[in-house]
Length: 452
Image 1 (cartoon, rainbow, N blue to C red):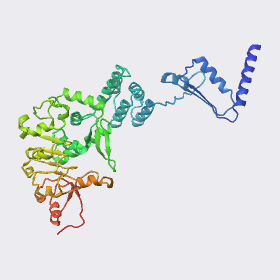
Image 2: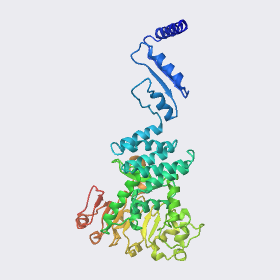
Image 3: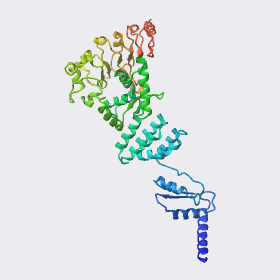
Image 4: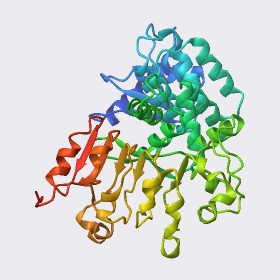
C-alpha cells in the first residue's frame, strides 16, 4: 500500500510540474509514425486526464486506418467512438466521393475507401474514379466490389495496371457511340492538342455519331454532348478554355491513350496498316495502301498510286507544310473534307467538290476575296478567320486575315448552318444571308463602310 501511495504522489508531483511549465500555453502532443501498444496508450491517456486543462490534444499520425480507429476507441474507457481525422490524398477523394453519393449508398460507403486505398498513391486513378462516381453516383454493391477485387489482384506500385482497370470502369459506363468516339482519339498522338471543332466534325463525318433524325444539326449536338462527357469524366483533359468556360481543345493523356489504343486495335477501330503519323490524316474506314515510310507529302504528290482517291472520306491537312511553291496544285485534286492550316490559295477547282460540306480555312493565308467565287451548294459550314487577333500579335494578324468575304451566291447554299468570321461586301449580301433558313450560327465582321 505504501509503495502505491508513493507512486501516486510521484505522479502527482510530475503532473504539477508539467502544469506549472505549461501554464498559459496551448498543449499539443504530437507523435509521428510511432506505434503505441494498448498499455502505453492507456497510461498516456490517464496521465493527460490529470492535467487541469479544459482541452488538450494528443495527435498521433499513422498510415494504418485500422490503428487510427483503435486509438480513437477504447470501450473500457469511453462510451463514445470518434472517427480519426484522415489527412491524405486518399482521404480527400474519399470525402469527395461520399459527398457525391450522400444518402444514396450508406451501406456501401466503406467500399469506396477500399477502392481508393487500392488506387493509392496514384492520384490519376483516384481522380478517374471520383469523376466516374460524379457522372453516375448510383452504383450496385456488386459493381463496386468487382472493381475492388480486380484492383486487389495487382500490386499498388504498378500504375499502368491500376490505371487500365480504373479507366475501363469509367469506359464501361459510356454508350456504344460514345465509346467509339473515345476510341477514335487513338489516331492522335498522346499529349497532342486536338480542337473541339475538329473532333466534333470528324465524329459526325465518320458516322460515329448518329441520331434518329439523321440530320447534321442533331448529330453535331450529340457530338458536343459526347465531348463534354469525356471531359467531365477526365478521360480527356481540357487544353484551352474560353472566356465563357467552354473547352476549346483537349488532350489525351498517356495512360488513357494506351488503353484506347489497345481496345481500338482489338476491335479493328484503328487502321493498323497506317503508321501513327499518317493515321490522323485519314478516315478510319479508308482502304489506303501506304507504307510506314510514306509521308503526307508522298500521298498528295501521287494520290492515285496509293488509294482509290475518289472514295476518300476525310483528309485532315492540319499542320501539313507542303502547300508552298510548286506544290500549290495539290489542292486541285482533293475531293474530300478539308482541314488545311498552311494553305494560301483556294483553286477554282474547289467548286468541283460537289459533296463538300465543311470548308475550314481558319488560321490560313487564304486571301479575303478568295471565297467570293465559292459555289458549293451542299456546303454547311464555312469557317474562317484568325483565332488570336490580340494587339500583341499584330504581325500575325497581318499575315492571317481576320475574315473572308461572303460567297457571291450565298443565297443558293440553302444547307448552310455556320458562317464564321465573314464580311458582307454589300447590303445585298446581308439580305441574301437572311434567306438561309438553316443558318444556326453567324459571325459577321463589320467594316467601317459598307457600299450599297
